[in-house]
Length: 253
Image (tube, rainbow, N blue to C red; front, side):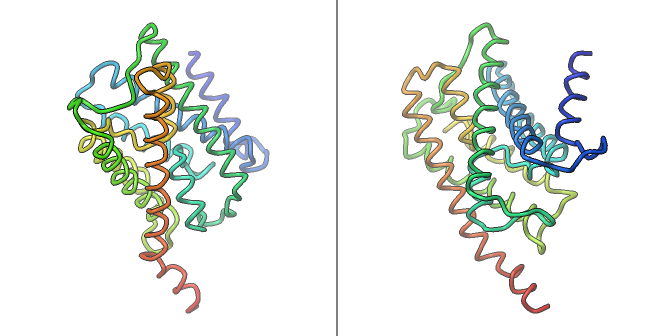
């Protein structure tokens, strides 16, 4: 019952237009980014703590659900790397204004807060239990290997997000949640034993904070976050080249 009441309250905040109010607004967008990131990182943490054999599928499904539920409110980034990629791309979802640097900064702040609180939540569920941010089950991956797989699969995540949500040529509102959620599954399965398949600076900060930044947590969170953010910039740069057709088509008409 409490969960239903909480869901109704959040729905009123993010979907104010359904109750006679104005659509969108800063509060609705930041709440959307906070909730989406919170559920994503909470799902990740509970899967790891519970030693789930299907964590990548669970986390991918969580992202898919949040995108369909909240994508129309804030754009459904739920990841600072994606927010940066959208900003660098210079694009915006159809019918929406481009985010300014300040607006993007507030969105990132909401995402980081959501990631940290989600991590503290899964830690509380397991009575203070946590796990370190670092190599996955292999336990032997070096920093170069970790940075490599985090860069590649964060790039895939950001690039696909841009292609299916911002492009008028390849965009697919009906399939965007499934496409972007599948990127988490792809990266999670492929990279989990090497880097943990984090692919999100908000998740990296949350995991490290729940572990009280032990075992080089500060260093690891910086390495992961910088790598993921660079992947977002790279994805936006490639997107500008491969999806130049969107701009050219507008000029023709």
